[in-house]
Image (cartoon, rainbow, N blue to C red; front, side, top):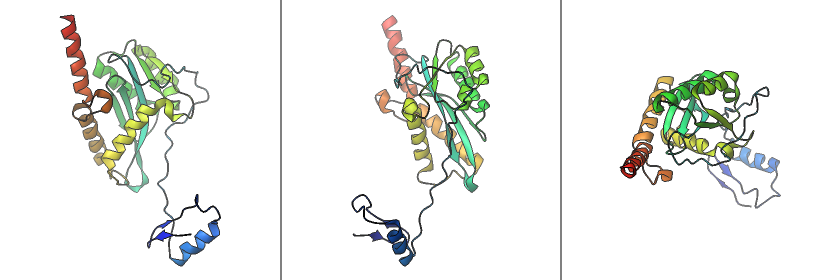
Length: 236
């Protein structure tokens, strides 16, 4: 069996050589003064509330829409800071253009975080009456306070299956892109203020300049502008 190593990393082909034991690997690592890499602690952002009322899945993994303002999706992701601390980002995306119409950053994951993001979406769009909002089964989205806010705004809730990330895949992909492009390989954003500025700048660029494959390689704002222009032309 061949090993590739330097002073820090040992790469083994366990699948090709199943006879390799953990003790043998440990012995080789000690010989070359190699230590294992400790991965960053995973932060769980989806914690279901067992007491929450059931909400149907109205999306069925269809994250598209024929018009702006009809279907929205939301999620929470963590933003790592120096010293092992975190901020949390809640977003609301329009399924038509993938535009970020609402977002909120806080040092907690209480219901207020997602409620603020939805209120911003209502302010951005002017109204949310008749829209469907899709999320995972996080306790924040299943809370009575959030359900009451949705009722107040005229929003119908939708939720995917418990523990199935594919039922909210578009939001998962969006947050992965955000962290990949803003962290650029770094372990954290530094301090809280730097994190907020960095994420705000990226979200602004995402809506106004970043091209999206789902939009025919147009930015969300440009895609919606062309849609509205086309509708006005047809109406004339």
